[in-house]
Image (tube, rainbow, N blue to C red; front, side):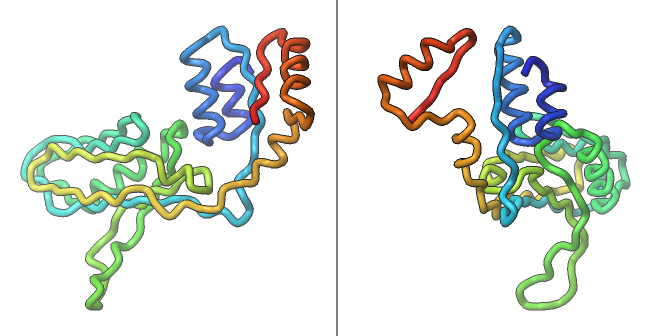
Length: 195
């Protein structure tokens, strides 16, 4: 594999494999990289997080959402409502296919004492199922006066895929010395087999 685009076409944009391959290629652009892709578990659950905004802007500024070091920013004008800002942020997030999450609108859960939902929030869903989504870092910064944010971190991802099929592609069930000899013999690029 030689490019970010090739990794995206093989593993889907912003999948865990695509993002790892992109980072490796960016760190060493002469790298000859081989990746064994493993699909999400059929019973896997994607991690989710949420962002709720409240208030009405009394001045200008921005809402900036950080996702794994990438920043998605929207402009805030005086008078903008929290609901309109959430809609704009959902649209901005979903135009960036390099992010490991998608965004959607959802009702804010009603208070535990009952009643109706106090409004809508932005819900982030990891593109890859499993516990890896729980580690997606999200941050929010609001610079517009009158608007506040409440961020719920990514959580709830579970059901990681079995690695057996992937390890079987490169696996070796011989001895350590046999593995070392095999690695030396075929090491035109680099082959690493681990125990």
